[in-house]
Amino acid sequence: MKELFAEIERINDPRQAYKTKHKLIDIVVIVLIGMLANADTWEEIQIFAVSRQTLLRKYLDLPHGIPSHDTLQRVMALIHPEVMRQIQTAFNQMLSQEEGEALKKLINIDGKTMRGSAVNEKRPLHVVSAWCKEDGVCFGQTVVHEKENEIVAIPELLKTLTIKGSIITLDAMGTQTKIAEQIIKQKGDYVLALKENQGNLYKDVVLYFEDEEFQTKAAYTQTIEKARSQLEKRQYYQSDDLSWLPDRQKWKGLKSIGMVVKTIEKKGQIKKEKRYYISSLPLDVESMAKAVRGHWAIESMHWQLDVTFREDSNTTLDKNAALNLNILRKMCLPLLKRLDIGMRASLKGKRFAFCSDPVKYIEQFMQM
Image 1 (cartoon, rainbow, N blue to C red):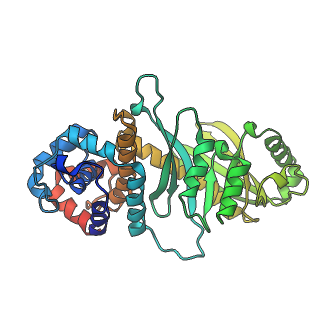
Image 2 (spheres, one colour):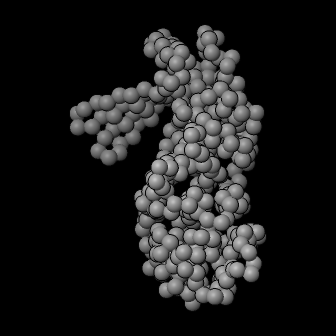
Image 3 (cartoon, rainbow, N blue to C red):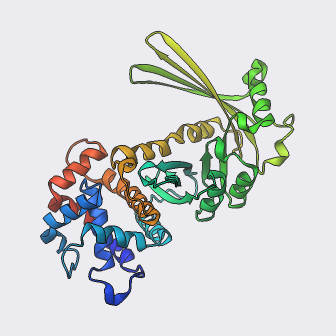
């Protein structure tokens, strides 16, 4: 992680030099290590750093000791999130897997509201992220501004990403003709969910797959899993028969449509639901199934932010500081996954282990 420290050290300090007591790299690294060590609030980060000051001095200068929690928060609010995103990108490059050109990576895009950041009448921060399960990293994020929605934020996020050869998955909010066109222009592929908000397109695809004759002509695969005392069966159908589809010309690169039938059996009760998709993928039902099933990964990442880091309980009101914390939490996720504590443990458990023996685990962290 020495490369990461070097990247942080290259940040242009936004503070006036004659007013600064604490080095910028010291503040950012203290917050990052504090998060790894089970500290969720500014006060907890300060308490951890003060109690482990001798250890931290092995890696940081700390010319005036440990900054107060107010200083930590104030300085993190001064760093522009775009600068933090550049650090995130450099960090991802250190960790990302080199799989070659043959493997299409899945990049899941979805939004999450940081509920603790609400203040007065203003709504809480809503962050749209791009998550790659294969690499276990977040490629980027953008904020949905007041009086806007994800439809505006997604194109801005896509502009910051290199998606050539990747498959982008989006829920129904992102199923827009301009977004599909942008993905194709950036040489990516898409699998986009359909819901009733798509009007005739949704109705046409539903009618197509309701005809059993068309179902038998479609490519097909299925998966069966037992989890949480229930049996889950997923049936995937994909068709490249689009000649009948009136809206096909509106969707840049459209090559196939798909349906997933999910059947859950639990305690003798059977529940069935159907979901529909459009895609730029050619006929390859296994790839479509992987993309559809893989979209849950970003929901898992959002769950980890809430459960492992208690993000929704964090009441940082400054938007810059809140977003910078969000970025650092996402950087902590792959670090915790790689942390070896000698036993199987949740990420929450690994944070507790890090806090219990920081000497051991900071050294392991530095060697990653």
